[in-house]
Every structure is written in C-alpha cells, then in structure tokens.
Image (spheres, rainbow, N blue to C red):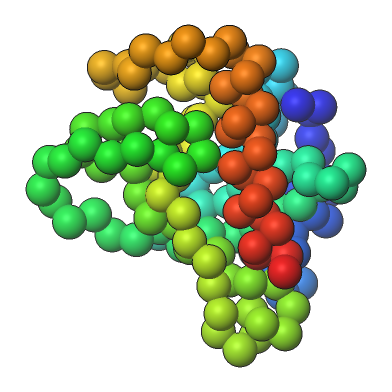
Length: 161
C-alpha cells in the first residue's frame, strides 16, 4: 500500500459526517507503519475501544469507513476473519459493522463482517503476526492477498452502495 497522510485518510471517509471525520483519532505512527506489507490501513480508536477505522484503495479511489466493534461474549471460541480467513482463538475476531454511506446510512442501515479484531489481516497473511494455529493452504501469498482484497472490496461496495 502507498503510505498515506492524515489529510488523505480524513478525506477518504464515506460513512461519516464532516464533524465525525474531524474528531476521529488518526494513528500518530503513520511514518512507522509497514506500508509495503499492508493491503489496507486499519486501526482501533485507543480512546473508544468500540470504534475502528479502515482505509483502502477500492476501484482506483481511497475509501475509508468507520466501524463499530461488537462487544465480545467472553467465552473462548475459534473464529475466522471473513477478509483474510485467518483463524483466531478467543477474541481475535470481532463483528464489525459499518453504517452505509449516503441516504441508506442516514436511515440507519449498516453492513457487518467478522474481521480480525486488531485489523492486522495483511500481517497475518504474510506471517508477520502469529494468530496461533494456521490452516495450511496450497495457494501462494499473491493469491491470498488477491482473495483478501477481493473480500474487502466486496465489503466496501456494500458500504458505499
């Protein structure tokens, strides 16, 4: 992924008001992010644990979405991320919902997906982070990245409408 600036990140959001975009907490470690290993930028709001944000290139444009993270049930279970298909035990995967953009979002419509709680899908794919036991696959890293970006593009298309 191409390194992003704070202004580019803020300009990308499609499901937030201007006020929400101004107030959202952009990571302060942007220069240190492993951009060459990222397929999208995702982060949790340190001041509001139920909020998360995701910014990705989709159809040639930068698209950002604000997400709500569902609270965990507290029981240990194995879950799979719907983007990167990484399996986690415990709270490693969370249901994240995004208000739809435009009129549908103003009417209260949203879409959801089970996503790695730390939004580090790209790093799990590349073996830079460990989620525990890995599922053996016969496809290449390039194919895994393509599959993940395809799943992400489908999710973003539902948000944008």
